[in-house]
Image (cartoon, rainbow, N blue to C red; front, top):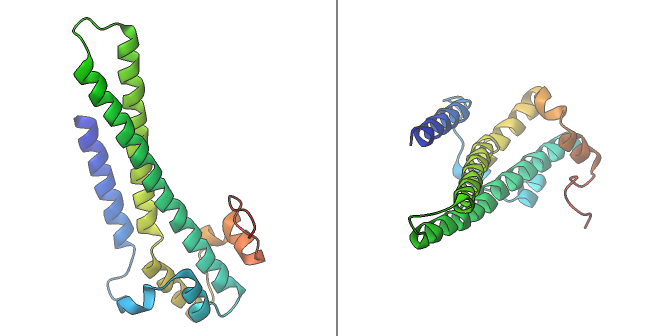
Length: 168
């Protein structure tokens, strides 16, 4: 129980830090940033760098959504196995059952950690933050170094597909 509370506190602090990275005076109408990827590219993709930034944010967001969805399913199935095994177990259990519980608990814990990581990444790579980055780029012609140094951004800048995607 203590570990769960610790993980929950860490997640809350991380989410608060991620949401506080936006300035308070950055107000945007919802219609401006609730666009699809092609609409973003059409409206804000004025040069190669802005198009690469849009592709970068959408790729990161898609991967984060997969990081949420897949571990939730794996953790739910594992938790179901644990519940069924616990309801069918007898009082004189052996080492095999103990290792089964340990293994399934490990899977559930890993699924929880991966899900929380995906949620934090979704909070970091929102469409609203993308629009703010694009406006910053238009005003200052500057993209942060942690983005420009990434392999994914460089591939997006060249127009190559992401490394985990097959060419269409």
